[in-house]
Length: 369
Image (cartoon, rainbow, N blue to C red):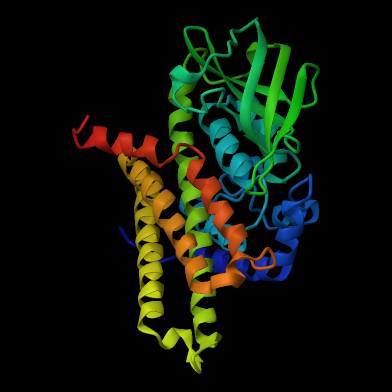
C-alpha cells in the first residue's frame, strides 16, 4: 500500500484546490446555502469542462478514465471548499451503478451525457425508517407494474434528470431508472440545517418497463452494495476535507488572536487542542486512503469501509466541535465558514449509513455479534 500520489494525482489536487479557491469562496457557499437551487450552474459547467463528472467513466464513453483513488482525492478538495453540488450522487453513485449494472445500451444512452455534465442522476433509496438495509424497502416495483409511494431524503432531486429508485420486486430488489420530469413524479422539499437540498419524492402510478431496470430483475441489491460503499467513502473524503480546512483555520487563528498580550497559540492548552485536531485529521485520512486503496485493488473492503465511515463520522465531528472551542465567539457567527463545515460533516456522517450502522458491520466482522 503506497500512499504517494502519482504525478497526475498531484496535478488533480493542485488544480482542484486552485479552482475552488478562485471560484468557490466562502461567501458564495453562504449564499447558496440559502438559495433554493443550492449549487451554481456556472461552476458545474466549469468542472464539467475539466472532465470531473466523467472521472470514473471510460474514454470510450467520453469519460476521463480516472479511478476511485482520483475521485477520493478530488472530493477531499471539494470538502475543503465546502463545494455544494450533486457530484457524489451523480458522478460517483449513479455513474458506478450504470457502469456495474447497466447494459451496454443503457451505458451508451446515459453515461456520455453524464460525463459531459449535461445530465445528472441521484439515488432514491430510503423510506420512512431512513434505514439503508434491504428489509427497510417497502415500495414495490415489479416489471410491468407501477411505482406508488414515497422516497425520503433524496439529495438534489430538483436538479436530477434521472432518479435511480430502489424498490422491492421480482422476488428481491429492483433498481429502476425514472425520469424526474415524467408524469407521476412529485418533489417535496425537506427543511434541513446543513444547506443541502433534500427532497421527498412521491411516485404515483409510474410504470416500470424492462428497459428502465438496471441489472437482473430481483438482483438489484447485490449490485447496489458495492456502490453504497463507494458513496460512503466519498462522503468520508468530504468529511476529511472539511476537517482539514478546520485545522487550517484553527492554526491560523491561534497565531494571530492575542490574549493577555500574546497569541493564544502560545498557550499550552491551545497547542494541545490543535495537536488533537491534527491527530484526528491525519488518522481519518489514513483510514480513508487504506479503505479506498483496498476497494481500488479489488480486495475485500466491507469492514474497512465500515471502519472508515464509523470513525470519520465521530472524529471529524469532534474536530468541528473543537474548532468552535478554539475560535470562541467568532466561530459561532454565520459570517465565519466554520458553521458551514460543521454542518457538512454532520450531514455526511448520516449519509450512506450512520456511525451506529457501520459499527454493527465491524462488530459482526470481528465476531462480537
